[in-house]
Length: 362
Image 1 (cartoon, one colour):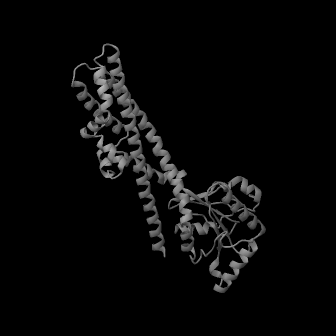
Image 2 (spheres, rainbow, N blue to C red):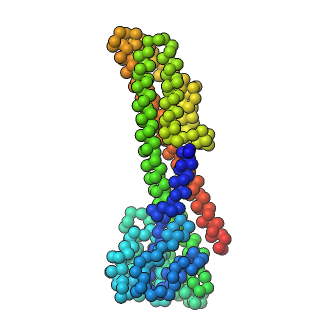
Image 3 (cartoon, rainbow, N blue to C red):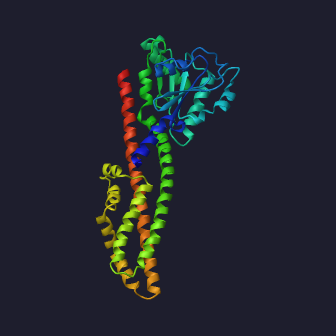
């Protein structure tokens, strides 16, 4: 299996890898409409609606594109008082907060929103906070702006601090605007960094194993190169070097699972082209010519009894070791460039898919 195909399989595995998903936490008091909003986003009745929050003891998660929508039990109940709720559900673990409320904001609501904003600002990476007022369809247009102004006044915030969205689950209004907010540029940085982190982590683990195999291949060939360096038959050593280097470079590519398709598809990349060139006799000939001075010293000194032969063997050994190490670096860099290209393609595909989803729902 080629390296590109292996990396593509890792990308496919991300669809079932929990660590790659950005988690969007829905926070609010019982009856605010968190579950109903989640159902509206999923376009199906996935989350149970109308269940008493005192009975719900755990967070419920639902797959939403490349995210997890997390329905958290309401706070301020007999089961989960304000401070107990925060300790149990650790909201700081989530990537995005959707604070849902219906009607007037309470003092507990204001405290919770302030805590969420603090989590979002002090954890070293952007964590958007969205404010969602449910049952917005019940309000007249002129009341809507009055309610908006009243909410921001009550919180002592502005729309730049935290965006506010009005939705109505009964009439399925406002969901498109909320989805667009989820897919904006700032939020994309969150899921993209999560996906890239998992992808590159898994790929680098695989490349570490490849590197060990490649180093083992070099170890075997450099011993042979040392023996060939001491070869007393004029003309034979260069021919053996050519075959030895071709065999070593081939084994290194096999260790990295770099096949002809990989080299052909990404041949416009300079580092891949360099790996490709050293897969040919001409490329190895050029390599040997670049080391002509050292090779000349090797050819002369090996005729000096004892010391000269040992020196020539040592030089052949070191030249092969150096060439092998450099080729390993080339293959490593080529693999990383292929990873980058595939990641870029996949991110673009996800972006296109998300935009297509929004267009269909518009």
